[in-house]
Length: 129
Image 1 (tube, helix red, strand yellow):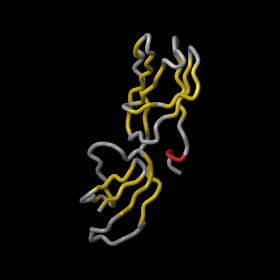
Image 2 (cartoon, rainbow, N blue to C red):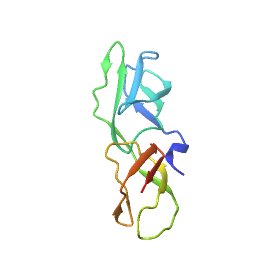
Image 3 (cartoon, rainbow, N blue to C red):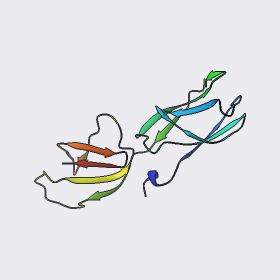
Image 4 (tube, rainbow, N blue to C red):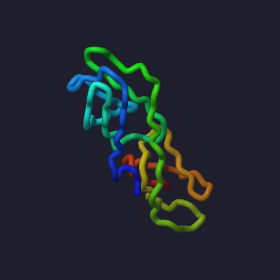
């Protein structure tokens, strides 16, 4: 099962967080705050997070951005390939499901051969030919 089927909750500790004045981003995407105290934040990471490392920034309106250099690593997950068999001649459209596909310069290799075209349908699906 890909991680997109279950929410990922990020736990952040620090100080001087203020309810209704604090936002959190992971990379360029918002992290939806579930719970906040003056010393901790629990937030849900976006399901559209591409694979790789993403900076975590807590912003408090009256104070500014966090100064910690911390990041979140979204794993690249492949959990399905259809069809799961074919010939060696190429040209077959292959649907791949998983998580973390939204990114730049996405390439896919199948049986040590690079797909001629890759179409990213969503963060959880791509098609390669």
